Length: 301
Image 1 (spheres, rainbow, N blue to C red):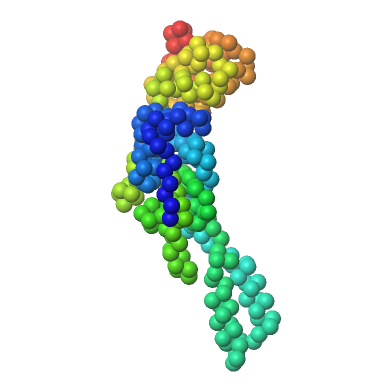
Image 2 (cartoon, one colour):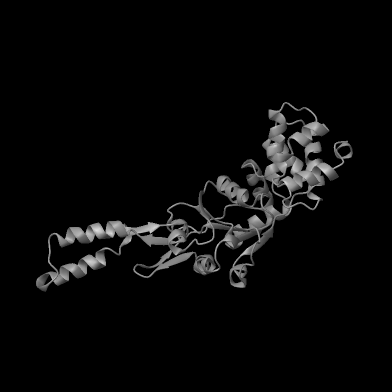
């Protein structure tokens, strides 16, 4: 198993992520660098839409690795996460063998061979976890929104996170040819196990400070005037200070900036803001709260 270094320093990490379109804070760049140096999985928590998933995509782009994604959800199981046997293909092989042999006497040895033959690599279907381990090329393995999966799925991850290996009872232990860069994300809707946390480096990504968010907006929407970008970030910050069902994410800040470009707005005015709040806020009660409480004249000054 090879474990080639992807990054040479924190500064190199920050620059490489920026080149891939991800503006990282010092804390993010440092933790990504350490995850690479130490060969540790990276557990990233924080509100939805702050760039947890985008971070893994940026690491893949920056390092030229293949991104392999396991999207978690309630009910995801071993067959969808790790591997399963191709039962249809196995049945065809058994049927083909049965057409030429009976199952008694001298043919018993042949049937034993068939039974052994159908549990081989030819009939194994790789799912994301096994695919990342068996890849011939460097990979970034993203286990996205792990907190949405049942707690049992964490058990499947422990062997991978400790040894970067998967045990298939019929085939034995398969060890990674290249150590994957593993990113696990969580919105903290349930507590993850201590056993899993021990195996990871931890990173919490929150809403960025205004200066950093303005850099992100300017990178993603370069046609937006710098003064307007500052106003956008300031107004989004004011919304986040309210008690809302869902505060606007960084992704929604970027969407709103693009909305303003699409509407031809070269400055913010109260009517433009009110008419486009649905880009930032996704619940009517939040829109009502913002409309009633937000002092647009002061926020846009």
